[in-house]
Image 1 (tube, rainbow, N blue to C red):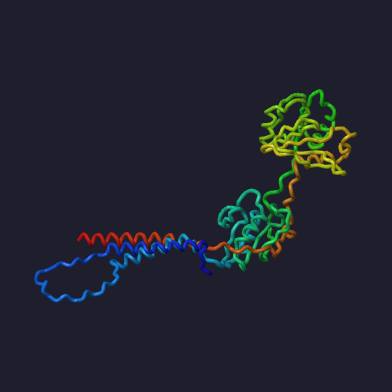
Image 2 (image 1 turned 180 degrees about the vertical axis):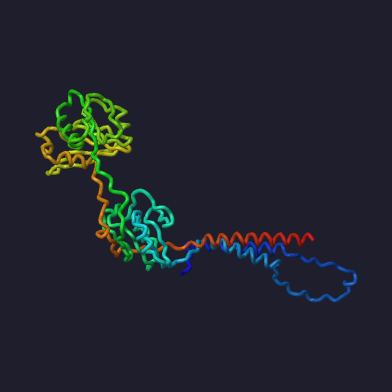
Amino acid sequence: MNPTLLMPAALAALAALALPLLIHLARRQQQRPTMFAALRWLRARPKPRRRLRFDEPWLLAVRLLLVALLALLLARPALLGTVDTRPRLLAMPGVDAEAIAAVLGDRDIDARWLAPGFPTLDQPPPAGRVPVASLLREFDAGLSPGAPLTVLVPERLAGADAGRLRLTREIEWTIVAGGSRLEPAADTAPTMAIRYDAAHREGLAYLRAVASAWQGADGSPVDLADTVDLPAPDVGLLAWWRAGPLPADVMRWVERGGQLLLPAGADWPGAAQPVVVWRDETGAPLLQAAPQGRGRLLQLTRALAPAGMPQLLDPAFPRTLRELVQPPPAPTMVMAADYAPQPGARAVAPAPQDLRPWIALAIALLFLLERWLASARRRGAAA
């Protein structure tokens, strides 16, 4: 452990040590000569040299130490290189309790759940989805180099990310009985509502076909209406095939998180400039989009007709449009044997141990001692 100062320039406050010295010099007892008649005829002797004296040296020493500790507190003292090599164990919620007890045995080990906050095993297992990869990286980064780490995982685990898991150390990746308590969420397709008028009937068949493909054979009928009524809140996409300005309540629906699809040639209602999110084989734009509040505005750049947009006849057109409206979630369920972490990640230097709380405690105790010594001086002077 190496002591250091994170702000050494603050030691300039040590110049304040002169204040207690000046105060004690100014308040020291002054001796005034008193003339007696019988002493007038005595021969004058040389005056002794005056020495620099401080009254109440203990009180002065405490005050000097108090000022020095205040300057040290401002300099932010810390300890570098603190090493804690105790073995750690992380258990993912869902593993068998008997397997955890068998791995622990009689070893003195710091065992915790692989969950946000890393609670100890004597607490109930946390509920909900556990981000395994990010939690492992967080726990590994906070450990001292050389501290052994054991991770207990079930055969299948949820919460993996797309990247290969790399840590700063080699860990004991132990697969035990049990399974992830939380299966991946079902991939629900978005629903589409269509609002049109008589001037925009052309192309509605393609929109209806896309909505039917999203909902599947067992889906509910397509929400197709020639009114301006807003769709249900759970609708993922509103296709607005109507002329005229966009109603204010539709824009509010978008800002609350909805997605609005506009035909080619419609006036762009948003303030943000759209960007192209879909191009054809030649690089020509097909769809542009821009955020609007918590939602998004989308607009086709071509009319819904095979002559100008041959992609309508492609069987993959509904799937491509769906991935633009609702990107597919990344797979998070993996086999634990295939997700064993590998070493090689860059280790980050551990954070220095802050010593300011201990310095503050010493300052408080010294202040109480200084007050007691000062009050004792006043009581002695009064007596």
